[in-house]
Length: 269
Image (tube, rainbow, N blue to C red; front, side, top):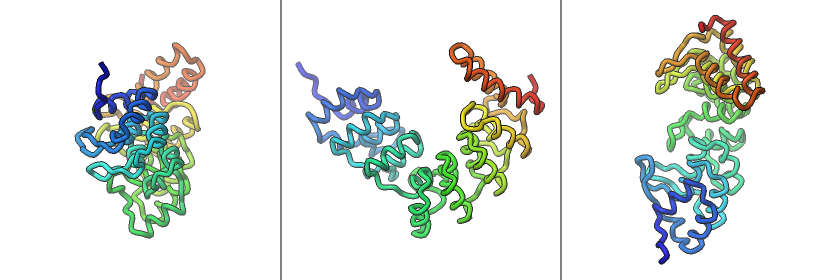
């Protein structure tokens, strides 16, 4: 006896990344591509939204090839591209290449200065209305220097989280620009209590993480600041170094170097 495929069941397969099962189900019941369900307290999520949220690139490509609507909107107006900007940034260029409509938030992340200029000229706000995301923070998270500078030139507030995003992206060039524009080195995230220094250390080596840490410390970042759950940057660095020491000596050594920077700046053991 064959079990009838339902939208909730297929949604679970999508989120789990069961590509072959998803391919077969969609081929047998293409109507499910347009079905919607509730997710994270919001109605209107399609299978494509769910695949994007779960970071399942292969499933995303399969659903789009089968005819999934790249412009479908949830109850609050989120498209799959909005979900990517918020939860799976690596899929933003993928969706754009597949033909998803690019709005201000996506343009900011992708570094598309011309598109973002057009959106701003057309009245787009500095806060994305669908996701509530600050466009400057989105540009910083994407390492997009061009759109970041455009937004600052257009009056974007530099102190709404963009510095933490630039620190997490390990981009000292963007960190410098934002500090020069007035971003506070010690701004705390209202939900987590994390500062840009926490984000830089948590992101670990890669890019130019040591220079980001140095810039933040030179700008007055409190090396002893703790998150809402009591973790200092030193705590985060040491835990990460210990975790990597078991299977990646190079990563552990690079993380130890970040720890040494913090200790040299006065972080207490």
